[in-house]
Length: 253
Image (cartoon, rainbow, N blue to C red; front, side, top):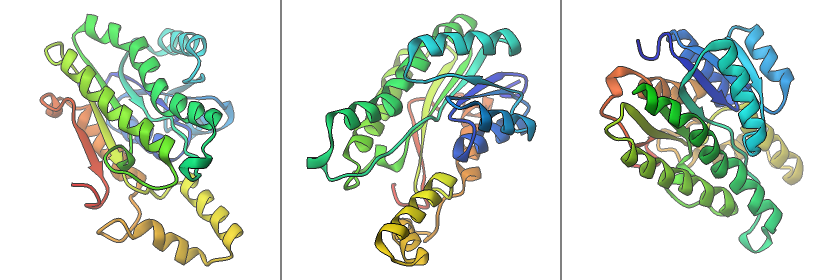
């Protein structure tokens, strides 16, 4: 059965790694709902067959979460698989990180995982089966300069993953994380273009900076992250809980 026939919800599912995860789960037979704040990319992804439907919701707003999940479950059944993928990053030296930036990044990267999981976990426990997969980052396992709030939030995601995994270890519900390195997504490409515009340096040089930390010397592909997620959602991963799988070409071991 797993994940075929199960209803899976992927936050931040309209693009990048989220869309790749949604596509892979759909191909594995899951009924997938993608969630995000903006309807247009979600609708387009559904039209492309990446998911069965979408829910417009803000993962930092409990009321929005409640309404969005209610609509998704009314249309496609109870949610047994939750992929907490929504996230954001902003760069600045630590001394220049403002409190609003800190609060915003903690909210979208960490508090959202708490809110979404707390909303759906009771149903999974009652049914005796569930999968929660939190998309963290290698920034959850090591430090990086100029992204202190993001690193702190992603470390928190791994800590939360481990704690909830222990609480649910005998229930049929597993809770895990995947930790991608720099991935070849639209978001990263936009970031690279911005750096090129600001510095005047060549694109190849900037890409080289991102790939330098990967022993394989390349960007991670979104489909590689998605494959790890599908595995964690399968019955073959029943003994996997509380784990943080680094999909990073050996950057983190």
